[in-house]
Image (cartoon, rainbow, N blue to C red; front, side, top):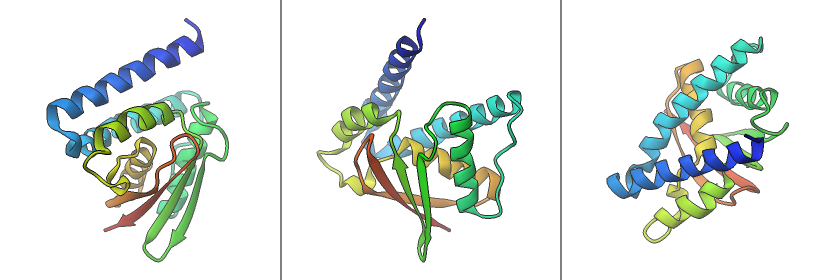
Length: 163
């Protein structure tokens, strides 16, 4: 199976899983579903990084942990280099996701599921969820986020606040 065929298959599974969950549980619960999925994804990425001899994701700050998680993804070939910009601000962090393999899923599914009743700030973000999991596991931090800009595949921007 070619890489493209694998990607098409995985996108289909992701699409189906999110749609099925949303239809059964409601659009409001998608963030909970994606949080659990992000934890599994992050742990799989960590396992693969370890198997390839890459260093574990660590950092002196939440921002550094998120940047290092992004670098790990790039080292594994999951993301392009420099796919995440992290800026610290008075309220927490701003994450800018540059390019995204989930763009198709977000633009077609997530916006379709929640656009009729929700503002874009309530949309879930698969990538932000993964970085939130990294921060929680590596720094014992808890937080929440909202999307400031929803532009799948271009530059989605999330504002992250920690408790």
